[in-house]
Length: 414
Image 1 (cartoon, rainbow, N blue to C red):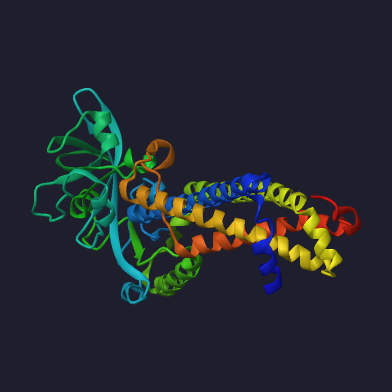
Image 2: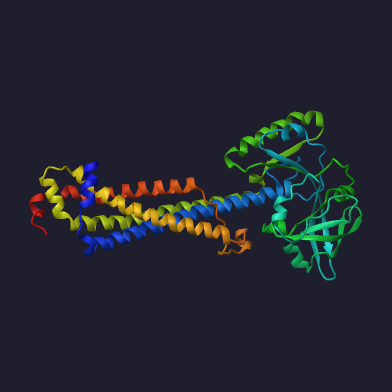
């Protein structure tokens, strides 16, 4: 192999003014553009997956425990749960961050000229506000203390539809066997950029909802269990472990429950992510194919310009396999330079986009207002290894041309 590298370094030293140099530059640029697009596509795909998981789990938790017959947040009927079975054991699991009880109540908001159907989501002091606080546009999260003035957090979508502003007082009607009316003060406006939830859910005190529903303090519509991390590979195992702990206590508890995961309740978003992953795979294949095509052209140019050198090497007794290694070693240098250039450009772009978010998206279509970036050094390394290996395998195709070259016909070529 040392001999192959030695010859490759000295092969075609006079090609600076020939086609070889032009083909070499084109090949380097082609490889650089290909790895640039591949790394950016992978970073954007991971960014979307991370951001959407944060939104999904931030709004409804990783695992939801709800009454049997209900379907999480898609069921607007007033159904209740008592104390969560084996709550302390679940909290002691190393991957569980918190458990929060949520009470729901359908309602209508009436303004001077509009009526909007909504669902009030009641939370208490155990609620994790991190996601909603990161989605706040103005104001603060509502007070959940029973003795405080009734406050509510609404989405920008609802505020725009009803022409509402921060600190406005709204009239909310709760319709059941009798109509109940409450006046609530808008303490803040958020934008989770999840259309089906932004236009429907308002956040308020759980004590208010329980009082309207006629429930005890420990009763709620469902329990949301949040994890410390959102590892998709471990999710099913974790959900099954929680299910086992809950179901073990059900016979003594007196009611049946339904346990669902965020990947089930928001399956349409997961399908969208799978489609995005498929697009990334197609991009990966196309970019390697384009770079491979240009590298093949570069190899053929180098072969034609050095055809007499190949004849000399064969006449000196070097086998076809050895000559192939010489040209593959020479081309691997071109691939390496292209990968280095592409990596520098792609990493610079990803870091700048992650910091400044200068590329924007329509959140109505993409659930987020900017192009998300989640850059991973392991992902970059794997992409480079796959790209380099694939290109070197493709270069074996033109290298077979060497076996057809006959020294007697090439030694006189200059």
